[in-house]
Length: 200
Image 1 (tube, one colour):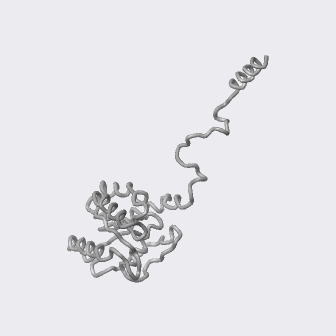
Image 2 (cartoon, helix red, strand yellow):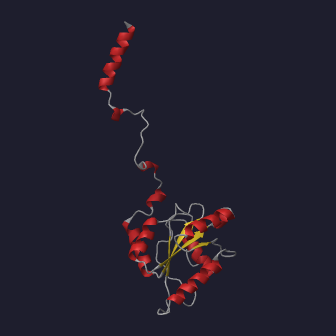
Image 3 (cartoon, one colour):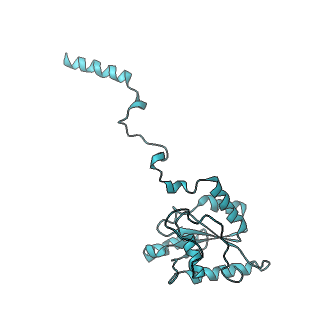
């Protein structure tokens, strides 16, 4: 009796079971749950920021995409690279692998080799006193300025995700603080024009 009763109860429950209402199920969710997305990830989502980004690309002869050496692929914007390739092929794109002091030398060397397959890549450590890679970047920018002798000055635009160190790289190149630097994302929002050297 007990077994048949149990079977009846089980079949009755099976009929009334609704999978979508089962809170105990572990579901494969598409994408991330809204509450799991940290606010930093929404920093670059607004249309205004994308508009500013395209303006920087349009106004620059050379575009420097600053990447974080700890996660170069995660801080790359494939979308903007594709846009430059398709729409602005005459512009030069360079990768600057910043914060390379935070990873082992062999890791930096390997990433420079991988990224160089797509665009010229320089390893960099932004610091006002002992920066690394500064000479190489200035030499490269001087070479680019020679390609544009028709212009009095070439424009270099810095792009990159929040906190990859765009302002720090600029300050290291100038060897003084010309851009505000902050550990919080989105501190440098305004356009700043800085003369690096005579023609850049």
